[in-house]
Structures are given as C-alpha cells and as structure tokens.
Length: 221
Figure 1: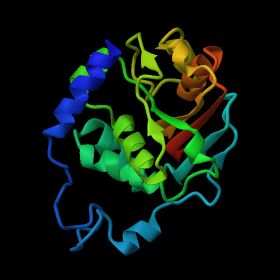
Figure 2 (figure 1 turned 60 degrees about the vertical axis):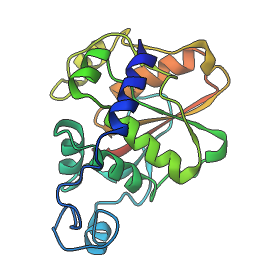
Figure 3 (figure 1 turned 180 degrees about the horizontal axis):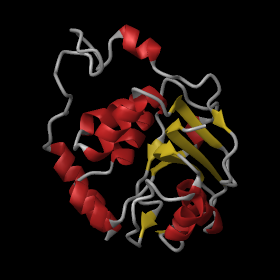
Figure 4 (figure 1 turned 30 degrees about the vertical axis):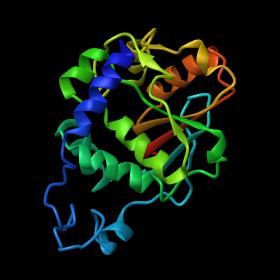
C-alpha cells in the first residue's frame, strides 16, 4: 500500500505546478527577484543554526537541524505542511542543503518521514518527501521513501504533551528487512520533543539499519 501511495503521489506531483505564492518575487518580502525563491537579504536573515547538531532531545540517535524554529521559518513550514504549498516544501529542502551535518553523503540513503495512508490521501503529498528530494539533488544521495512506512494513522503530534506524543506513536512505524546494514538519514520538517524521530529511528534500528541520523528543517531548541 505504501508503494501504491508513493507512486500516486509521484504522478500527482509530475502534473502539478511548482507552487510559489507569487512567481518572480521573494516569498517573504515580495521583492522582485530573478532566481530562487528568496532574496539575498531574506536568505541571510533566516534564523540559521550556527551548529547543526541538536542536543537535549531523548531520541537515541544523532539529531541535526538547519534552522531554528522561529519566525519566519515557522510560517514557511506551516504553509508547506498545511496550505497545499508544495513549492515551499522544496524550498525548505533547498535551505536545509545550505546547512547540512558533516556526513559522508555518498554513503547514506535519505528517507522522508512517512505519513499514514489516510493523511497522505487527504493532503495529496508528503512535504518531507519533497524536502528529501531537494536534499538528495544537492548531495547526490539516494532517496528512498519506501524504507519506512506508517501503518497506523495517529492524531497530529502538534499540541500534545511529550508523554502523549510517545504513546501516540507506539506501533505506528514499520520498516522492511531491506534496511539491514544501511546508513539512513531520516528527514522531517521540525523537531519539537523528539518523539516522532525516536519512534521512527528506533524502528529502523531494530530492523537492522547500521546507522540512523535524524535531520529536521528546524528545531525548537
């Protein structure tokens, strides 16, 4: 079912326009620009993390984030995730590629955080998949959305306390045996408590992944 959903999403995206709020203008200040989606000033003013490594989350695997979860990054992520803006999802992946952890990217496989089939069909796309594709394009790494699937539909993590976030995800993820021996970079939009990364990365590790690194566009810490 996951493969069918991924194929359907690929076909949908192939016929869908690259969706920026206003073509030819910076998505933040609306200044006229000729390339990219952000003007140079807005790009420089983003809340970049000086150190991509994120500490303080009980994930059990290395965690990294390219940006701090502050304005205007919060708005970019919300629009990419909830407002049907696939262009901003790709933009977030491009931004992440400017501040990546020092990994051997030729030896890793990038896996986007999966959605349940119900949420995938409701939203019609997975923003983390588009982010992962953008990162893979920059790093020349393999992107494989089939390394991890979400078998159980769960309540949205937003607004839940940490303990509820953890119990909400029990048994939600499943990985095929093909992950054995792989070095995997797991991509998500934001790390808030680390509960989603902990559940997903733990599933990959239990199925034999050699290494799992968690990478978010932004972190609250």
